Amino acid sequence: QVVLNNTFTDTSHTYLHIGIFNLVFTVIGTDGCVSTTTYTVLNISNPAIGLASLGGTQGCGPKTICFPITNADSNYFTTIYHFNPGDGSPIQVYPHPPPDTICYTYNTTSCPGQFTASMTAINPCDSTTATVDNIKIFTGPKASFTVNPDSIGCINTPFTFTNTSITGYNSSC
Image 1: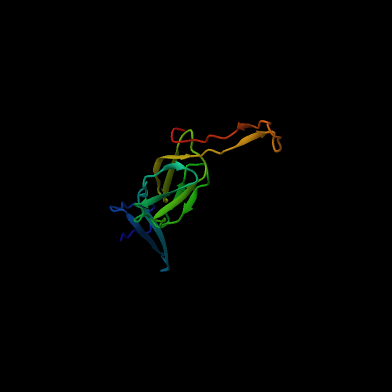
Image 2: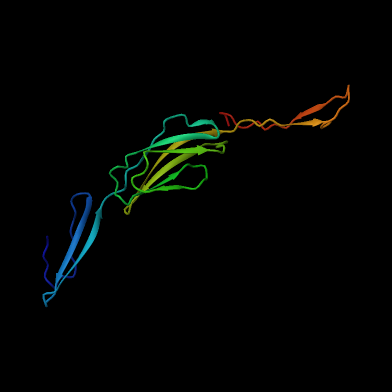
């Protein structure tokens, strides 16, 4: 506790430990009236966050991949979390605490490249981002043929089949 007289204009205090503190200002007027105001002081740093891979981040779509979330337990209660699967879909926002695991289904191909998923923890002081890369989602082939004549043919009339299939992307993209 610091007691200041009625002529002070400003003061300072250095917090020696990380934490959240209540700063209480009490003013006593010359008439004896008392006014108190409390401020919350955040002496915190950037939040912690981890986004892990269980492997198996490559395959044909649609493919569901689960990402364990780590290191968020000690974050400030107003920390929010942004999960970005990296495929252009909207960011998912979670309050504190975030889920233990986020599972996401990739429906589009990453070819000719890869996706990078990220989780960003944001508190009033700063943010931290963790990523998982090398997410490769392939598309399988789609069989398609045209036939001529298209429906009726007489005996000894040849049918011509033209391949219009889409080959898709495989592990070599």
